[in-house]
Image 1 (tube, rainbow, N blue to C red):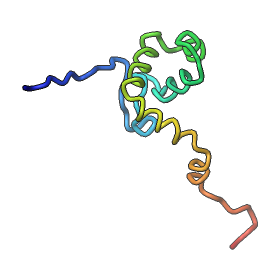
Image 2 (image 1 turned 45 degrees about the horizontal axis):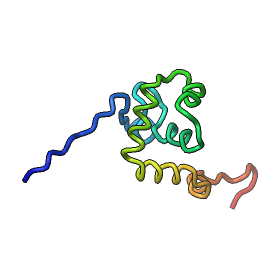
Image 3 (image 1 turned 30 degrees about the horizontal axis):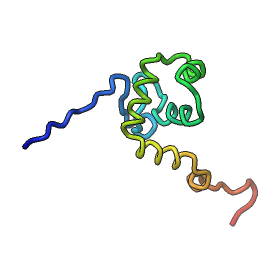
Amino acid sequence: MKIAVKKVSYPYIEFNSKIASGSPIIKGTRITVRTIAGYYQMGMSVDEILTSLSHLTSSQVHSALAYYFDHQEEIDKDIAESSNEEYWKKQVPIHPKPGITK
């Protein structure tokens, strides 16, 4: 017996390798799904998210949340990595202080 696999479409979500390292974003913006999910995890409602990001539509936020719920493990991992202060400290090159040579 064959099982039909239905591909889910998120009309307001896109991927662009030049924006946010290719993470899912809201189409036509630089707002990542990770950002919307982070606001949601902080307890913000859709209306509160829309107040903070007033250039977005309700449909865009709901699409981002739908994508998040369908890919929650992946997005939660992305949120954890982007919140890891020690990781980001390692990404910043150390510049010597002016006048000090090694």
